Image 1 (cartoon, rainbow, N blue to C red):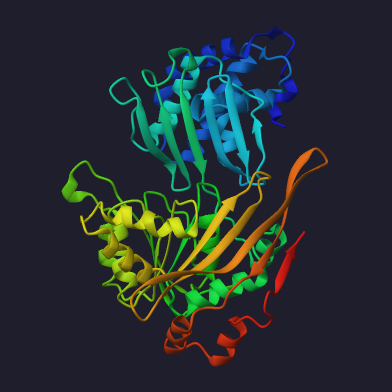
Image 2: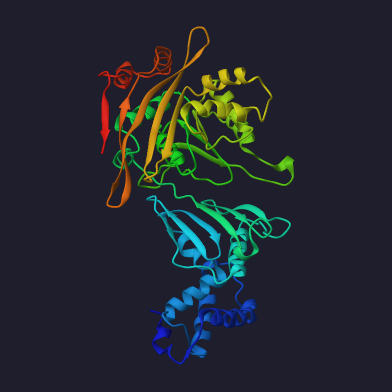
Length: 454
């Protein structure tokens, strides 16, 4: 406890928090010139010191809050982001969704979606706090810009809807996506039921020996976490070049006990500029990546012009791994075709031929109703001798039953290995240096072999 709190009597002058906040804000404003510091930590301590002094001088207190708690809450309200601060920097939270100034829902990494215990004081209070968040990324929410997207940091993305788009008495609506890249191991995926060991080994080995692939699914289906793990299995002497849009989610750099970097990774992010000549998008980064001698290229998400460049890179000998939004493995190719047409208006059949050649392996990840994440299917698109394309399911998750367990829905099913890789992809893997013994491990040993998931 703060030593000053020993001499502090909270019973003398109990007030509402909002009233004390207003008083302290006015007091701090009068002292602002003495609080300017280039050291954020030093400035934080100075502000908290002034808050504590004011509370002591006037024996101010709020019912239910200790002295230290009141100081922290006042500081957070004035200099940070109100009660959102404590949620923003936790590692067990994925999203903060603000539907109304009195309705805030928190999405946790275990899949639970729970209402926050706190709420804003008013619509204007909600707007003020969100404007502070946007200020971090140099963005402004006002009547001329009622929809704003920004970054609080390289780990936090925010989309805001303001007055004119939503009801005025709602204050503000916002979706805050907190990127907490989880360093999940193969054992974690298996324990969570995301995939079997055989499936994970299959994907890792295919990527290792140069087969490009696309991870597809909806938002929050686990695409990025899975792709991060796959990239972490690449040998340290191979060069990985990652491309992300605005926010860096990957952290693939490995260090030894002495702090020496032992692998070979380049992380890049896009840079937006109102001057189009200064704008650096994913397509531009991808073009530059091809000159940087990469062994593997990761395009975090295909959602525009970069899709055409990504498939071109994959068809010219580079191993490319990427994600996109689609509802199935089969639908993924049509989705990529649509994205490629944003760049060039090429015949659909021609583009379909290109993208199926570029990404022979597609895996579809889904967050199910019971909040579990599953790789629902892994497919191969085989190019037949006459040029036709034939889609084969290699692995599939079969849902057997949906039942209530302790009042909660649980989805029961099992994974099944359905088919082997085609002869043509087996040949490519051998040409890319895969030892025959490893290839044999990938092939189906027993027809209809299943792996039950409890």
